[in-house]
Image 1: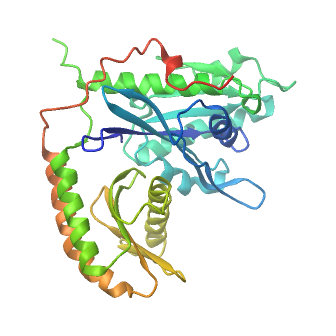
Image 2 (image 1 turned 180 degrees about the vertical axis):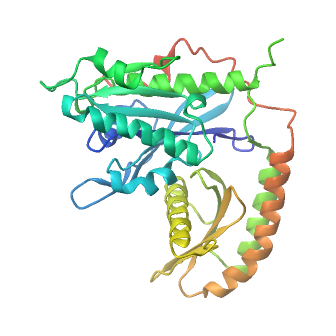
Length: 204
Length: 159
């Protein structure tokens, strides 16, 4: 959960990129790292705990500083989880203290069962941490839209965003940095909005 | 006004006092307090040579992974994680449900002294963190000044 440090004037927030294996979670972080406009010293190293074949083993981690609000620096910690099914325990560990989630879905038709399974796995893992997905800001990113076998967005919306309250969804081609910043900015907006609402006086 | 977990100046001051005392007792190189979610709360000692943000994230992950291993071998928990290096060593100790103490120290110093003095430091740290959690601080961060409609302004892409 986010922390406000009044001594150092910092707000620290944790965003996790979640989704099926090989869906583009790490690519999102690489693109943010490579293309974000920041002042010197506001972007940390991208740390990847990966296997020898560049598959995420534990997590990727990118600390990054965004805007200043009333003198408070906002520090974001971006994490990915390993998508492979066998690493579920690791996914649970990375989700600890999460404030916002970007669910990176793979647009290829044959990946739809994995997308749905991964989304259910996200809800289950949040529940194991006593968190409810309905109460955590999250957005959907439909990645790999440039591939010829990409399913229609409407179909992905039906599969992944068919709820009473729909969440923002973005088409993306992460390796070209398309839809990457749009998703990051939207999840940032949603979770800051949540913080504001948490502090709002109760409605009469 | 936002209502997030907050650490006021006096909290950080007392946490820093506890870390400084611990470093003086043990001759450790640096000591950090981190949240188990990976956030760095504060640090003391000669930490300038380390990337403390990344150190906090990785140490948190390593400690939590070891907690899971503890469960697999029917231990209620592993209270600490110790890594011995050739020049520097690291000890990560549980503070409470939410936080950890990380100690970086010369490999020439035994881990025993770290563990011995960590007990007292942890009590002080846990006490202050509990006080911060139970307090309803007067001052909180007002996020209402944000123009959330302009969400493109948070992170900008280089052209």
